Length: 427
Image (tube, rainbow, N blue to C red; front, side):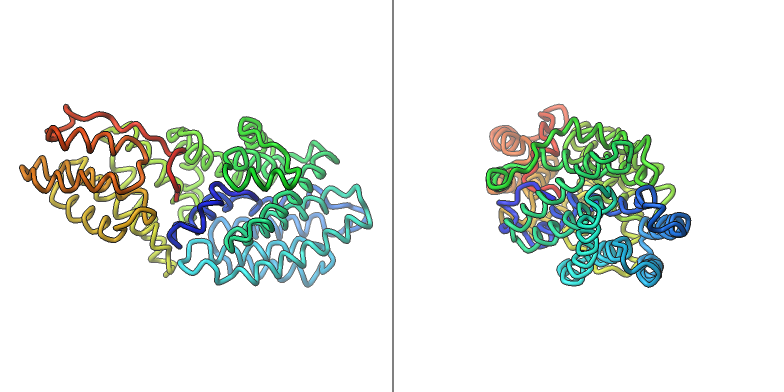
């Protein structure tokens, strides 16, 4: 699929670069293959419908649980029993992609991901050749192309990414055209339109080279809502995807929380859900602060516990971002000493522009803390540093104000006016 700011990806911090790709691609087609039981032709696999339905439902449940060993075992059984069907190979590709999802070394599984996707795509193409009107073949082809595009984007192979996006959405549209009542297809289509509608820079250039369908964010959200309501197998995945869209593109943080809450209750170990929820809480508090900081703190603690329990080499960017959130919470709840310690460490960890878009907000907050503690000289030093970093909202404006007039508390505050959509890189 297409990814926002591809033209800037090569300049980003490695851990941020992977998160920028991951956040956009994590839900593109990962669970959609389960809908294949709806599409399977009874004349070709008369005994397969109930069997593969159960197998793939179990596999999806294990993926939501992030129990990849059990999911992998089921995939192996599907491949052994039905070697000429793309389902098992496709899921194998997804599993390998997912294994590197939050790891620092996210490239570790790229080659094996491509290998399994290639096998799935080969079978899907063969099925299309034999039966040009088979929606399931186009469906799997679209999914395989989507994940290929994800890997190509990680490798900064933008032309290959664009070609995969073109082939992927065309295949999904073909599947939908063949049978508009296959409501699970609306999930992949919806996510494409949401993501692609926010693509500037190199994506527009690629769209000129390839006749990639124009994206419509409103249509995408509508398709996700259809999948939530009517999708047989993709309802939960579409629910998570809509929450992701609300956080990353629509600034509807409370709506995202409402969507994610039942998902996390059902799958408390799912890091996709937990990290998106954590961002929803944080940016809700950042843009419309309340006194209710405990939900954010609880979400961070739950996520950290899952990472520890799974013994993951979790991406550094997320771990340090959790630190920043905790430091900012301490500042907002009056623990200035703790806030200063945490935020100073964070800003020292990302001392240059491009390392973290939060550094500017960090130095602004450190300046406020210094002013509140009566250290005007230190406050001005921190305020001046704000101008060296990305401006995610109105930090630079605030810093200039407080250089001339000391910060004396929230009564002298100009509310933060940024929004998540405009962040230079949204982990």
